[in-house]
Length: 205
View (cartoon, rainbow, N blue to C red):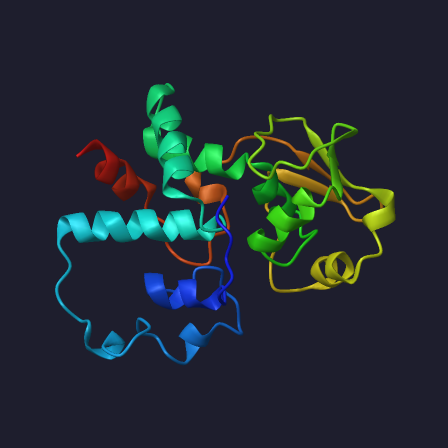
């Protein structure tokens, strides 16, 4: 698992978009890449460059997943029946850290991973501390009772910034989230346009 010691907001500027839609992102004021020559990088992007950018953006959105882990997820999506791009989104959204984030138990996907690592959630009544754990439709995620009054959780649940998608059913009182179904791209509330088909092109070329 990659550890981010620098500000997470730098990712927005690195990929060139406010990928989490956060109002505090510095990209809202400085919409260019970081570094001395960031404002001058306006060169035309090649097809490969666009594919790479799409991959970096999607990889970053889910907590800056390592390249090794992300490529394994793609390989699994490619082996599955159906559309590889849709399969990729379904696999990413089936991660435990993604569901904890979607349920608004925490404010960011990075916080979701740390929250899980520290043993604050259960899956189907059993403690799970692996953020990349794969959930199946019908699985129930719950914040452990001793963790429900953490300021992080209460703040996230009360935040108006994000909506809970319909493939995750949340009971705020019981602090449970039921993963109802595997979503397709149009179901996922990305603040920016994600292009998984470009990611598939990147790996298959």
